[in-house]
Image 1 (cartoon, rainbow, N blue to C red):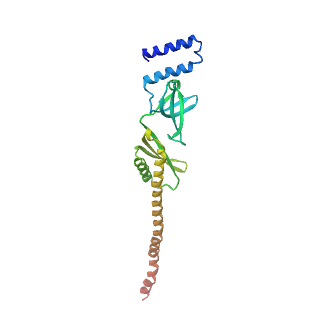
Image 2 (tube, rainbow, N blue to C red):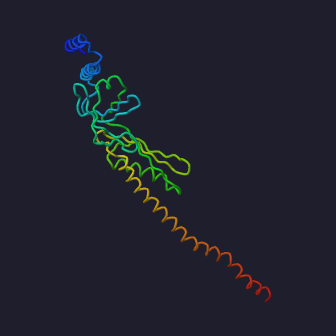
Image 3 (cartoon, rainbow, N blue to C red):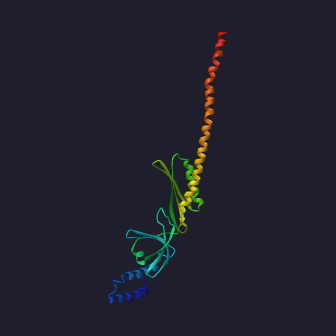
Length: 228
């Protein structure tokens, strides 16, 4: 805050104080001062995605306009139900809240995670990991990590990826959809291989039975030669 801002604010404060109305307008005065601080520090700007926590309530959204008293935020879903999807609701946030409460400011890119649960019987784990990698890359995101772990009777595969904040939308669903399509193809191929091995098994058993029975057929001829 420079001298010019103080010159603007101090007369207002003196007027309100002289009229005995400082308590009535204290919130407005606080918002005016917060507006000057926000514009001077430039930490919070139009286009930023922010998340504000105040009194247990959480406000998350994209800044559309910074007014004299309030900042207009386009609400964005926060959680599993509406992950980073614009809800269409506008929220008017008092500017004082933006300097008196913890504010999370998102960068140009963020790190997100997509998780899928695979029941028994488990397909080939290497192919599952490759399917998750391809699903992330094919949707245009930066691949960071793909991993596996077991939870109860299910196999959990998770992919960590980097995505532009402006493109967040519901990227998890897109990746998950492609991964599930690929994993079903893997399961179908595994089932086909298993069925083929079961069809070939009786032929092998028949050959083994013939080898076992063959000595029984030759024994009578050997006895006949001895008798002769």
